[in-house]
Image (cartoon, rainbow, N blue to C red; front, side, top):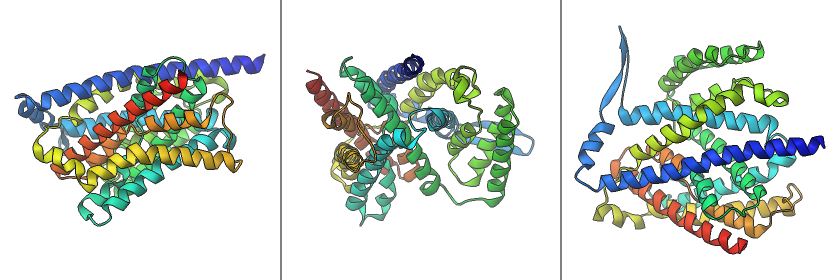
Length: 393
């Protein structure tokens, strides 16, 4: 009886999480379409100037200025990464990643979905130093977009399959965060790294000492963002580090600071920050040169990585994990369903575009990569819907 109650509570929690992510996914799709339309109208240059406008703060000798686009990608997206960090911590302590048995399947799927696409991209761009840096682009899965597409496929999808996709995407996000921190950071500044270490220690001691009210974590968290931003590590990593210091009690989830904060920021992140990110990062002006670049090694590496590499990597690594006895499939899942979900895993979008902006400085390369990501995500979504609908029928 107790187990049934616990299972029902977990089911409600995941269903609530999935609902938010699905709704956000539809809004992000709409904002992307709007941005692409506006980019190919006379309003393009006006909107571009808005995103490139400098804004910031200054107190005496202290000043911090970035473009509007920079504040979105380095500032607001740190809050998105903070929410991702909270989700990862919750899953690691009391969720689907809290034990080897639970975590082995989504971890295997995520590893396959990162390694194979990166290898495909690297193989195609090995002799092109200017694009080789983009190997991390096809590694990511966009959870909001993917869950929105899963909803379009119908309401007969087994809950275990949705849970699998969610867990896979959480592990995938963790992998993307590690890749960003290790391979897409600038020259490191030791003094700011030391300050970052001190602030992380302070936040951890606050957690250990029993400080539960989130308000006490806000100012140290903002300082952490600033020191990481100045250290050379990408500023959004601060969101993940900050999240790991927030108190969480798996035995009393409802009263946990982490769960309360996650619920509070879920709506602004999913319905403001991510749509704003989509608007500012998909303003792609289409012309003959850009479209012709779709057959370049850069575009082919991204498209083949997401469309072929993702399903191939996810399905094969899950098969190996199950056949070796490391993992086991839920009784409501089979390999055909795993393959159909792995197709949806090819929807890169948010994290892929984010890595694109970090990987390249050349505008043509950035826009070429973004267009390849959008086309790949569309193909992945349509093929995923087709296969899932066929299986349900």
